[in-house]
Every structure is written in C-alpha cells, then in structure tokens.
Amino acid sequence: VDFLRDLPKAELHAHLNGCIPIALLQKLANEADLSSSAVSSDVVKAGIERLKAGVELNEINDFFGLFPAIYALTASPATLAEATRAVLAQFLESDPLAPRGQPMAAYLELRTTPRATQAMSRREYLEAVLAEVERYPPTRAALLVSLDRRMDASAAEEVVGLAVQLKQEGRRVVGVDLCGDPLAGNMADFEQFFRRAKEAGLGVTLHIAETPDNTHEDTLKLLSFKPDRLGHATFLDAGARDAVFSNNACVEICLTSNLLCKTASSLEQHHIRHYLEANHPITICTDDTLPFRNNLLDEYALLLAKAPQGLGLTRFDVERISAMSMASRFALPASRPTV
Ligand code: 5GP
Image 1 (tube, protein in one colour):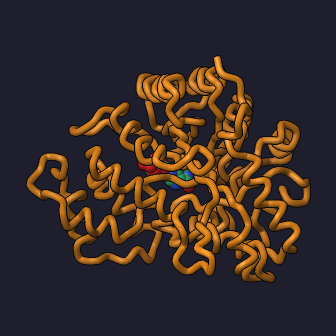
Image 2 (image 1 turned 60 degrees about the vertical axis):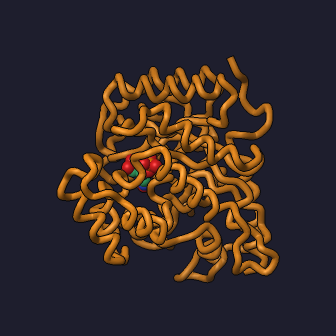
Image 3 (image 1 turned 90 degrees about the vertical axis):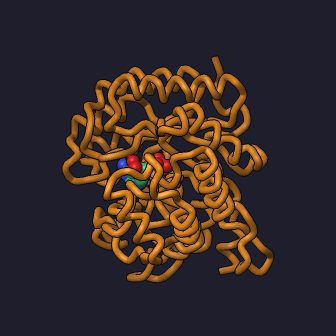
C-alpha cells in the first residue's frame, strides 16, 4: 500500500456531483428548506427525506434515484461551493490513513456540467466551482467543463462559450468534456462546439463507446473531433480501436465503475488489457466515488492485486501507468497553444 500511496497519481475523470461525500449530502439534506420552491417536486422531496434518514447507497440505482435530490441540494452557489470543497478535499488533502499523510491524488482535473438554477446562472455555477478549485495551486487542481449529450444547440453553445471565455479571463478551465446519457443526441451537431474549444486551446475529452448500443457512426464521429483523451472507450470495434491507437488519445479507465455498471463483465475481460498490450496511454480514474464507493488508491490496488481480484500487473507497470496519468493532464505548462 505504501508503494501505491507514494506514487504521484493524477485523477483525470471525476464528476463533481458524482463524487460528493455522502456525509455532506446528509448534512445538506438536514439543512434544506423543504418549503422552498427549489425543492418542489415529490422526487426531490423523497430523495431528501431518504438522505435525512441516513440512506446507504448499496446499489447503483439507489444513487441514480437520488440524483434529482443531489441536484436540488447543490442548486445554490453556497451549497455548490461546499460540495466542491468536499470533493477537492477528498482527492487532494492529506489522507489521515496514510503514514506520511499522502493525498489520494497529486493532481485533480474535476469535471462538472454547469446548471442554471433559480439561484444561479451557468456562469455563476462555474464561478462558484472555480473559486474552490483555484484555492489549490495550478499544479494540484483544474476544471473541465462538461457538455451533456442531452443539451440542445443553444445550451451547448452557451456552455462551450463560457469555458472559452473563462479560460481567456485567466480562470483555471483547462478543457471540455462530453458526458451524459451515452445514447442521447446527434454527435454531428456537437462538432462545431468541440472545434471551438480546441481552437481556444482547451483540452477535449469525450465519453465514447460506453455501451454496446453505441453505433460505429457515433464513435467515428466523436473520434473525428480529434479528442486529446477518451472516457471509457469500452466498446470499440477493430476499426475504431485502430483509429484510437493511431491518434494516441489517452484513455481514461474506470475499472470499478465499469464492473458495477456491468459494461465489463470481469477484470479479465476488461478493455484495459487491449490498451496495455498495445502500450497505449491510459490513466486510472474513479468516475463517481459516491455511487461506486471507490477511491483512487483502491483503483490502483486493482492493478497490482493478483487475478481474479486484480489485474496482476508488476510494480514497474503500475509506476508507468501513474506516470502516464501525470503526463496526460491538460494543465501541463505550455502544452497547448492559446488564441
Ligand atoms: P456533474 O456534471 O453534475 O457534476 O456530475 C454528474 C453528471 O456526470 C451526470 O449527470 C452525468 O451526466 C455525468 N456522468 C457521471 N458518470 C458518468 C458516466 O459514467 N458516463 C457518462 N456518460 N456520464 C456520466
């Protein structure tokens, strides 16, 4: 464990609202004003009541059922800031269990989808998150702005515009992401937005081929955006895999997430093996620590543990993977031209 704790690891694929510590959500639920108009729907009220009652998230569906409540609880700048602070601390502050207080991650690229709520605009959402991210030095934390596949063109245009604008104002936005329902949206409609992000010097990472139902066309369209990194990249056919190998985009691997979401049946069958065999850049990530109840150290432990509990890699391989994670950060100094 000491070997794993000492490795400098970059967490490059973590969703803010999927990584809020449950204890904080319960605190926010207890403090929530149930008569406020932000908490109007029955689903939200029921979710908040479950959090107050101390719900345990034992099943993935427990988490997805709570999502409307989680969003209601992070709908004001103050509660969003509190949630962001807790997520950053979870990854970046000294781990009390570590002998030398080593943090989970040396560096975190946190991603989130800006939401306009009754209490804030999308810009105010990003400002609240950025203010927390920027409490850490640039060598430790940065923000990725997520576009959701369910967004219509005007929302996607606004979100990418905000990412570009904030970067140009010198704020710590280093890239954009595409996430959300893997089967929603027509990816041809998104091309212009990712082109704009790239032209502005932002890194681009895309959730891609997450489910067996993602079409070859969808995958090829996304690859045509020339992303710098790929989220999951699980169900690539041979042609798409060749394209990924040739453009060298780093693949963000989320082992526990894939096992629990059943997109990988076992570690033996996991697509990480294709990338390891091809010596292709990868990075190990947690995705959503709240539902998956994982942490970055345990994800790395899966690399080292013998089969079938783990992948049985050598220390040398694991060291190489952690170095690849650090080398795949978007915030590397002077790594990307600005306009
Ligand atoms: P947020 O962007 O609100 O901070 O984080 C939660 C959001 O991240 C979810 O609504 C969803 O859009 C996205 N997300 C979290 N995990 C995954 C995943 O594994 N795949 C995809 N496609 N999206 C995800």
